[in-house]
Length: 224
Image 1 (spheres, rainbow, N blue to C red):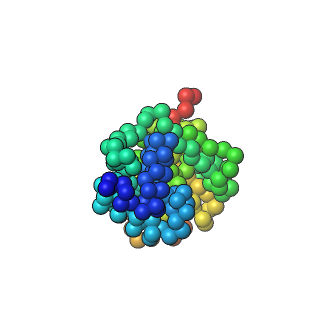
Image 2 (image 1 turned 120 degrees about the vertical axis):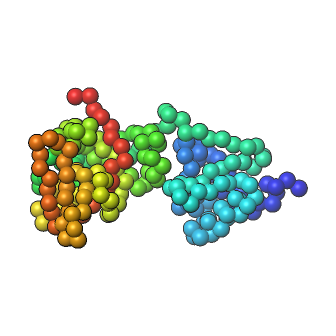
Image 3 (image 1 turned 90 degrees about the vertical axis):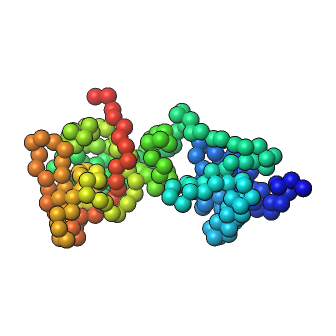
């Protein structure tokens, strides 16, 4: 009896779906996507079957990576290798613009424009699930020494936390303003938002009124 004959119908469907998905996209699906495609409503049931496929030698898993699944064998028993092709692209939501300068009142600008999107390569996401990523167009030049100029596009991972030195998009609720800066926690009550510009001063704000919305993963530089 071949090993593939030992698979349940659900497990066979998972292998078939993953084979097609990685061929089409160049990266593996999420557990939720696998469940939707194979009509398994419970993510714990999907996870159970994935672990069975690991045991049977069809999958490898990495607990430290987003989309950390790798199909290593298909139903015929053929060993697989799916390198991500440079030409592959991922469509990201363009969520408006972010100010790289003195922050200005633009609360509406961080909400998504459903009619706008941008295509990027998976390499620009640094292994992050595309569902956790969005893009913003930069307005201003306070981050020019970080090679980010007016009109460039920053690709960000959705997050509400940051470490010192992270470049982040923040919402300052007391001012109803948004800005793009380096993040530094001065003390328990204050955040320093540091520009990357030789003539601009940092902005010191109350920690409870400074809300991180995304951490920069990469930059698309526009030809000006």
